[in-house]
Image (cartoon, rainbow, N blue to C red; front, side, top):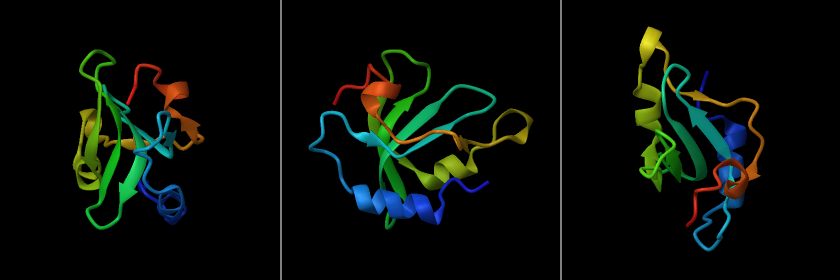
Length: 104
């Protein structure tokens, strides 16, 4: 499964930068199916191939906003050789709906 589709690339371009929003729209959600880690992507730069969004590794005080790369997500191999996956059933939602602790 590809982490990014043409439809997602188009949607990230339509939404654009959201740094002015206190409650940005999450366009895509990625997760580790065999361990910890959830990445909520609110922006994507096709030139650098980096996302911006909220990263929750352990669901604690270390969760933070920041940049993460498509290459890192695609290259990770966890238990049983499984990699990071995109939540195919995730519909766009405001960050306050999916990660209430994520305040900008």
